[in-house]
Length: 441
Image (cartoon, rainbow, N blue to C red; front, side, top):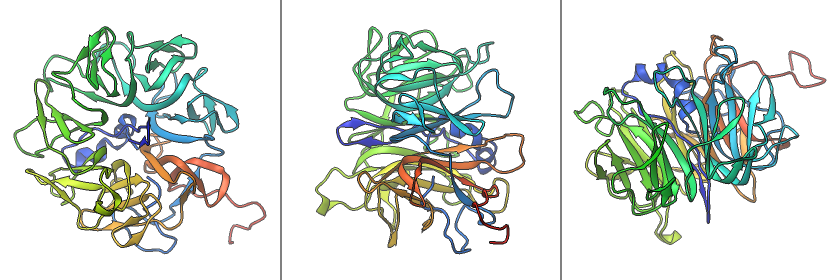
């Protein structure tokens, strides 16, 4: 998730997982929940890095990407398309993508960018999430889009809208403030009720009901979530905070001064990690099947007092990592770079930091549970607004034996080429030949 000074900017992250095998089996699904990495993963030198295989990997831009800030990525299997051919969606603050006019949202499909209807009329798209409103019913999943807008392709839709792959529609009467993140959560777990869509952000009402910074859409109507939240909420993630313990997974929400958990009936607070929480992730950092909750964000104290912008929950309190990040974290996700290969999954982190531990970074880094790895050759942040905002796992062809790829969105260029901008993937595919070069160059 991303959040700028004075304006909401977000990326959806991925649901929690309970074991390494389950995590691998669901890596493509995690991308659709998004959450949201490219800058700290691989070096030009053939050095092994936690969670990634070097063989044949390279950064690849998706043509001339969006012409402005990208803050949300999601993968959506559009109804009507061949199975196993998902579409990558990007949302943010931009007017064109691939040279084509779009408004704050675009889709990458069949090797090119295109608009999503007529886009949205407003300031920005901040969050994307795939949600099936009737659960096991006959209806198809749809892409839900949150942000700061009033219309979607001419349809009145207050800060949240639904895209079914062909047309836009309103989600009830919407919300009265900016939607910063979206997450799908099943409150009764194995019970009869289907999952619901949760929106968090800067709002006080959802439709006609009071909803302080968090609201629930059950496919038919909006409702509040318990007592709500007393402060702005920046991110939401489904995770199991006690790993293999007796507690069920919950909806964990990052706020201005705290991290709170909704278990389906009551709220529980984890207290504050010492910074404004903008991103959450659950990561098996010991490779033992037990997940640890990580929080990343923005220091709110004077710069001289800042220590780190990432911490983990040890079961009783927040603990900073032994190697700190020096600036904001906007997104985190777990990614297994070689799929079912021998390498462990790793936690990928995106933001505006320039150092990870004692290593120079460009807003992207990879954490293996004990140390950071950095990518020296890849996306570079725009010097005016240096930031990597969002991450997603994208399997361009699910029937293809090649592994899913890691996508990053933000404000950057690739290898200094200004036409290759703001969205890129870490690809295991053979790179396109450079014009005028020979195969042996």
